[in-house]
Length: 447
Image 1 (cartoon, helix red, strand yellow):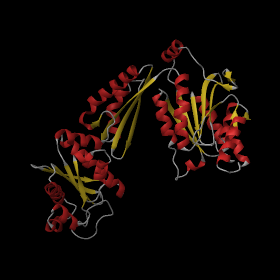
Image 2 (spheres, one colour):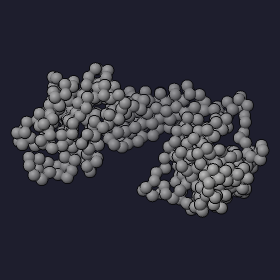
Image 3 (cartoon, rainbow, N blue to C red):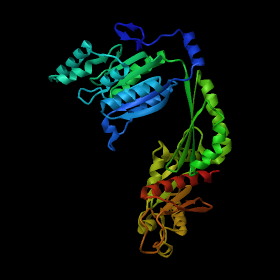
Image 4 (cartoon, rainbow, N blue to C red):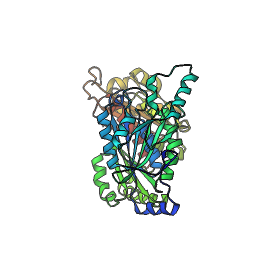
């Protein structure tokens, strides 16, 4: 184990002349990082590791790709093993959590064991801890002294929002340079500490690289179909990392490339994205990451159109999705939740006899809802969603119709379209996919 030269008793990061750093950037592969979230609470259904998302964004902005994320409970041997594994496969290892005063806060001890280093109790940290407790007119419990334990060779990172300082090590492990960073777990402490203390150090310590990204989004198309059509394209770009994500009726294609300059990296992700766009055509609703809601509102705005909605089975979800977008009122006039048959008549002028004859979940009622809400509001377009989210209806004119049956209507001053769907899944899935189909139907109506 070799720690790089020290100053004032602490390890300092390597300082390369600018020409040396540029040489490294052009000859070495991009550095990769691993994030280890420490805490048994994050292995339960009640807590999530949100810190890693923030750290990933910050590292990406520095041209560092996060290759691994690990969650480890408060078990000494498990954490030591996780750190050793991370040191062997990543250049930068960040640990969040486990720096508190209690016996199950094991990060300092486990990092020391994994690295083969000793801990020493830092007097300046003890003084600061005592000052914090005196300011609160409290006696400091003896176990708080553990927060002053510092790995030999580590540089302390000031925590302005908590009692546990972070720690930074720039060292050699088994002949390879490693940067190890210990961060507190509470997000209000971790985020500013990472921004203020770690980002500047990383910027100085790492070879200059830039990370470019592109995101293509598609709705209501099978993941297997997307991959079959796009894999022959993206596999030609070995220097571009491609990830396909599927969920909630949407497919996302993420492209990531690290190069010495942003121009080089951006050119590569743009090249693969443009070829995929040529292949997928109108199936792509966004080529730079915009949501389907944003795209729909943009299209309405470009055409000077307004929209109103009458929703039954989705219970206002369609309207809620549109109103997430700031200034959506410019083109989305609003909507009504016409959940009962009576409300369909009151707010959208659907004839009660039509509902009695055809059922609320029918092409005819979807058409009448879309036309009625458009007339009542004076909007350019009227959209309706009516369906059975589940369970199946057992009485009345809709009896016998399957759960998941949905009709979507879209009316303008000249015509009305109606789309029939059978959506598999529970109530939440039916409602979400119905809103997704409605947005996509609206988008494609502009093509």
